[in-house]
Image (cartoon, rainbow, N blue to C red; front, side):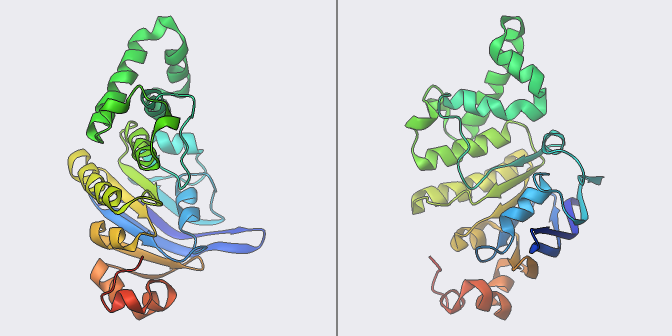
Length: 261
């Protein structure tokens, strides 16, 4: 069963076409990789799905319900989570507080805001903290809950962002370059974490990533974009050998068996 369906989606900015008739599906329990050169439209695709940029044309459905025209908060409330290329953590907050901010789509923004400020809602605050601690334990960061975001390494910040997206209990999670700037050891950890998110929490994942070895290893299927159009789709072995993909993005070294950087 398809969790997420994107049909004929197009969007342009100032006359420049960013997406041109893109189709994709994300099945239940699937990790779908999305790759392509810089400017291919990968992040724009995620922005369109989560409502930041409404499409000029096309349809987007989550569990059979159209997302077109909904605000990002309403889409998040339908249990679609998102991380971003640049870290979005609040510098003056602790790790625990940062993760708790991800609950706005689950408890409601007004309730969460009051829970963080009002003594009358201590029970709600306690629930939010308990949920945050559960997610931190899941991602292996429970010992850092009292640390400020500014005290974390870059790799730790990336994992905390994933934790913040997970606290809303998404059915679908959009990850925008979670491995950017990470060491090889941390990339291996992100690979394992994505598998656990899928297998243990039942979350379907759309992964936009430039670290090709990660995409090839963890993805069930891969969609390739170039100049806003889908040029290929299939399993990792199919994509690795596709002449159009090699020409547009992967390069001959990867096709010959030498890993891309």
